[in-house]
Image (cartoon, rainbow, N blue to C red; front, side, top):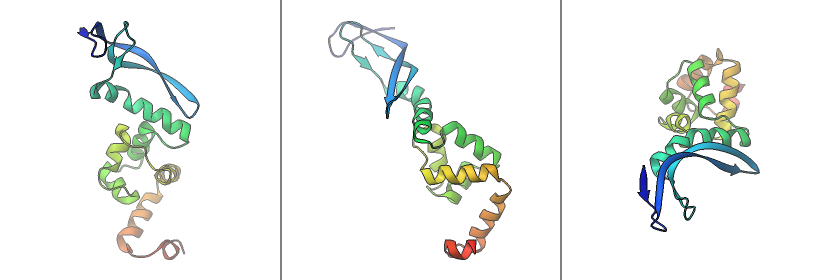
Amino acid sequence: MSVQCELCGEQACREIRPMEYSYKGHSITLDQPGVYCDSCGEVLLEPEDLKATRANLMEFHANVDGILGPSQIKRIRKLLNMTQKELGLLLGGGPNAFSRYEQGITAAPRAVSIALRLLARHPEDVKQVTDSFATQPSQDFTQISG
């Protein structure tokens, strides 16, 4: 689809092109939809264009940072047989946190990543953790772990 470039006024095309993204010294090339002008080199990425690559970019950033990415978080949540809301209330961030993590809108904090990795290794402990918070929500960590 041909449109007019907002910068130079020449013809630009809405298409998908490979685009390289860099983060902390690492690079990834993703197929990025957008409006590309070959005359001036302008690239216009609208919100739906950014949404198309958001989860892949978040996976890339998470991998570089050593935390869980959206697809890993979703896989572990399903392994634990919990809803996004349940896991958000248990591990923090609120009822919509895991929706944002799984869509790649927000990166999960490192502490959440660590907790999920531990629970993925020992899914049988989920009931014990949820029960301890339900029966003794005001106790501090030393009282619960002791």
